[in-house]
Length: 409
Image (cartoon, rainbow, N blue to C red; front, side, top):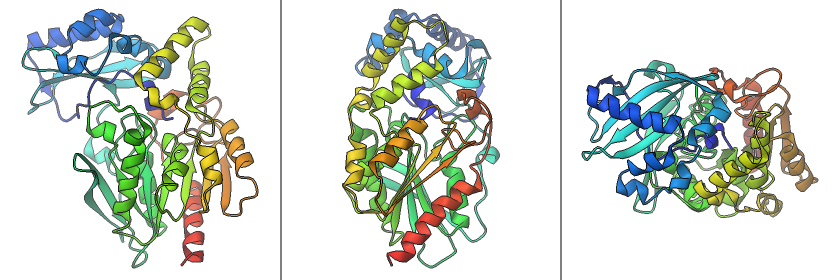
């Protein structure tokens, strides 16, 4: 699971852009909403929701939202002036919120009856120049759309490596929560980074905005959360490349064997893949992140909120057993400083797949959950430090794909 799983207080998605000052009335209303959130007044906050939002969210799901964020970012410090996103159908306001571990944006939107249409705590928007990691000179990037049925349309980016006429392609599959095509986590964009590094190594890629990022409607199955859209993305990738590999991270890595069991893939790369049920992984994360004074009752209440918010995360997926039945190349990668998916999971994968000739493993002592370098005890605050994935990781993925691509031609 990515750090975004702790950002549970999501009512709807509101993209951010350049902002402008807003009226005093709007500021006062946004400030009131934030105050209710800050002081955990779920009943009062719920009363302000639009009826369409109430139909998708219970009062209980509002409980402790900011506490979950503070588990990751440290305690709330202050927040800035409210600003407005121009040209929005609803009135959308944003304030930069300072936590001990960094800054996030609080975004609230109101409909024409002044009820809350959306409320979200999310990473800060970046300037376009900061978001752009240059492509290799011989690669091109094109826009396309992943379509799952008639109703789901997910914008995607396809990077075509220029190192050969028909290079292999990877499809990136995200971790948990509403995630963009770059898998943006605070200051870092792992999928964007890898797409460039792999293009330099002769491998094309497809990355797409996750369904829960594009559409605010809640999902309640792993099929709707991840699997069906990943299957559609693989089908689209087949129109660009003869050989297609899946690169999953966190939840996407955990589900990679399940996806591979339902569609033809030439191999899978599993980065920080839980081998255990997510119920155990989430419990371990909570123990790691909770302050020493947190009581057992408070921890149990937090787990209960997560179960109610996303019950499908707590349903067993039998990923290890599924992987044992696959007959395709698999590469399992793990950062040894990862506290979200730990070396215990890595060892369980080694045990489950021991002796299978097409399965290989690699772990990296200095890397965390995002496969970024650090020292000492890993913390969520590391994710607010911009960095790039070490070349060794891209080399290992490229070598795995190239070796099996050549072997299977």
